[in-house]
Each structure stands twice: as C-alpha cells, then as structure tokens.
Length: 231
Length: 259
Image (cartoon, rainbow over all chains, first blue to last red):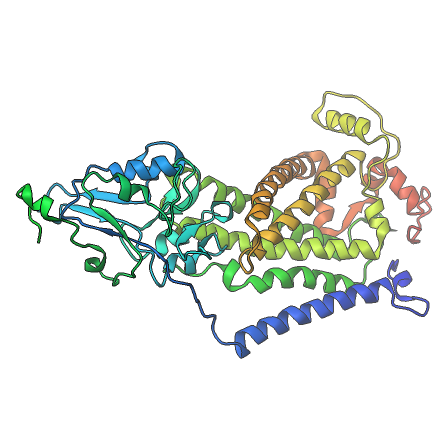
C-alpha cells in the first residue's frame, strides 16, 4: 500500500511533524474537555452582578393626554426623524377602557435585575459602567431578540428597531446624536423636557418594582385649578 | 425568559471541534492515489471524510446563515423563536464544518504536496475560461494532459480557501463574543467581513455543485467522492498527466505510488 505517512514518522532525533500535530490536537482536546468539566462540576453557577441604574423615569398615567409627543421626541433625538415605531417609550391607548386605564405609558424601568442584560448572548445589552443605565451597544447586537422576549413587561421595554436592525431601549438620553444636550442619568431626558402635560419625571431613587412604584402623582395645584383631579 | 442558545450553553464544543480535527489528522494513516487494476484510487477515506464534513457543514451554514439574514427583514422579525432556531442549526453546522476543515488543514500540513497540487499554474486563468466554456458548450479546445485537478478547480480552490479562512477567523470572533467582551469596533468590522466571505463562499458553492455534481461530465469524479475510485478509462481520458505521475505506462500497470 502506498503510504505517505512513512516520511512523517522518522524524525531525526526530534519531534516529527506528525507527532507535533497529534500532540497539539491531543493537548487541546484535553484542555477543552478538562476546562468544560472543571467549569461544569467544580465551579459554582455564574453570578450576575449588575450595578443599579442611577436614574429612572416616572410617569403619571392620570396626567398623560396620549399626545405621543414623548414618542416623537424620543425618535427625533436618537435617530433624527419622527417615527413612533422608533420610540423607546411607548404610549398605548384603549378607547374602550375607562379613565385612568385608557392610557398606559410604557417606559423602561431600568430594572435592578435586568432580564434583558442577562439574556443578551453578546454583551450588546449592558449596564453603562459609569451610570448603570441599561443600554444597547448596537454594533454588538446580532438581532436574536432574546432581550425583547426577556423583558418581563408588556409591551416589552426593549424594541426591535426594524429600520436599522438592532435592539433598542431607553438609555435616558445618554446617546442622542440629534440633541445637543447632555443626557443620561447625569443629564436631561428629552421626553421629560418636552412632555406638554409634564406627565413624565426623572428620579435618582430606585422606585419599588410595582406598577404603582413607577406611576406617581405629578399633578400640582395648578392642575387642580383646571378642575382636574389631583389626588 | 427564553431558552439558552447553544452558542452560549455549549460554546466549548466550538473550541473542541477544530482540535478534534487536528488530533484525528495526527492519528490518520493516509493512502496515496494508486492504479489498482481497472480503477484508480483518487480519494482515500480521509479525503472523503474531510470533503463531506466541510461540504455538508458549509451547505448548512449557508442555508442557516442566509435564513438568519432573511429573518432580519422587518416583516419577518416578529418573534425571536425563529432566530434562535436557526442559530442552533448554525451551531451544529459550525461543529461539523470546523472539524472537517481543521481535519483537512492538519492533514495538509502533514503532506504539503496535497496542498501544492491544488495551487494554480500560470495557465490557470486562460484554462479556467476554456474549461468552463467547454463544459457549457460554447468553446472548443483540446487540453494538454491534465493532472489530478483541472486549472479551473485550482482557481476555485483559491476562492474557497480565502472565503473559508475569513469565515473561520471572523466566525470564531463572533463565537468569542458570547463568552468575552470583544471590542465593539472590532465586531463592527468582523460582522460585515463574515457576511462578505459568506457571499464569496456561496458563489463558490453554487458553481462547485453545478460543475462537480449536476453536469453529467462530472459524475465519474462525483462517484469517486463516495467510493474513492475513478475508472482507469476516465483517468486516461481526463487526467492523463496525473496517470503519468502515478507511474502508469499504458497497458503495463503499476502499483507504485506517486513520488
């Protein structure tokens, strides 16, 4: 039988090419299997430690008029165009429901335990190291939409940006290329600034993780002067 | 929360597959082409394994990779479940593809002449045009005695080699991003490069399947990718130069391997 391997085995006093390649393969396979075994048996489960956000959006659904100014503003400051489907804050309206259930403001809650960050396989969804704000690194997003599904709220506070094809979520206006104002947890938020009803507010204190914890009373005496409920 | 991607839960398999390929090559005893009676050994078992592992892996990678791209169309990007499903298919194909490709690569390192016989000569471009023209029926040309691989096949090999190298390098970086923090700037280059190399691989793959499997003229060699052998008649007609290298002298048969 013609055997081309004969010349590979007869190294003169050293390691032959075949021995070297077999050794590299063998050591590599051993290292990977050993590492997997070590990780699977000896090490504890991964612990997810994510710093809390330094800022949160609060809303007052009883005050919201459903004008969608916040949605158009959000899209405008982030993408330079007014498009409600590109907004990170969502206003939903149900014409068959009674006040105050007829309008819902769905803003990202910057959860203390962010399921979206945990679900992201590439690290695209992450907590900003400086402020803890949960953000998307669009260049790392592979479009698997795990973050969209991982969000425990409906509608999901993470949206699929169908135009630029990546996940998006509220970053408290930290990255707003079309708004010449410092945003983020240390700055201003366009929706807070532009809401004509002043139905959105910003706080640095962590609200309780309930609907009531984020839905607060932002009505003052001037609101009462109009004959509208303030309690 | 959705189920975990295989790229996350079984990342270690992606690193194991190429190393298994290298180890398997080190342990493989290979055979050279040889004339045996009225047939010629063209591909030994190792060549068949590396070809089909690489080929099937590539086919499934292309289908699942393109499906992943198609699912990004706005009207189709509703739920994440189709994306997760295709990513898992992509994962299985990655394992097969990496094993086959690294098995081939390590085998080639052990016998560089297998690599050299794939490299084009100075006549490659001219002969490639004539070869495909002849196959498609709009050129007439009598080739000099061909060696084991046609010049056209050698040109295609270079395209496949380049595309495969870029796909593996960028693909491994994409997998690494599941485990470590790969810089966003680097990922911004890696992802489009992976896509461009995929298009190159798709071009090669479609041409390869057409010219090496669909055209009847290629069927004898296609059969040899399963059995290992081509008939002596076919080798005389299509690869006289190769037969000469194998030491075949007319009716006087030789069992001597090539130099």
